[in-house]
Length: 174
Image (cartoon, rainbow, N blue to C red; front, top):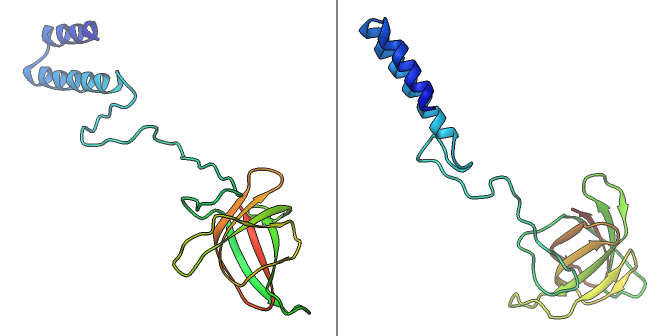
């Protein structure tokens, strides 16, 4: 880099007017500043006030284990609809229909429901509902964790079940 600057400076001083020398000197200093800002570490920036955290383009992932008690950092997938239909027993029941969020293809999934009490506390034990089987349980508020049997597709979120009917819950797994 120093050789380029020296050659440019010698050529500029040999046969140029003072205005030309100033323009050449400005050009050389611009080239030198570009060279110094691109050399060095990848995190340096030509804008000294700008900074970003490393790694710049990484997404943080979260391990989801559906049978383990606890909420996820965000809701995954979508709880699309909760329809209800009368059942002959008059008991509260739930059945899940699972689909892939992007393609809409039907998936087999296991669902784990965690009871939420009046104070907002989550129960330690889950109520498992496998595939599309109908499960009898109490009405109320639940935290849902669903996992596809094939692949790493999940749905998590809050769910309210109506009393005395079969709640048909349609979920999209992400």
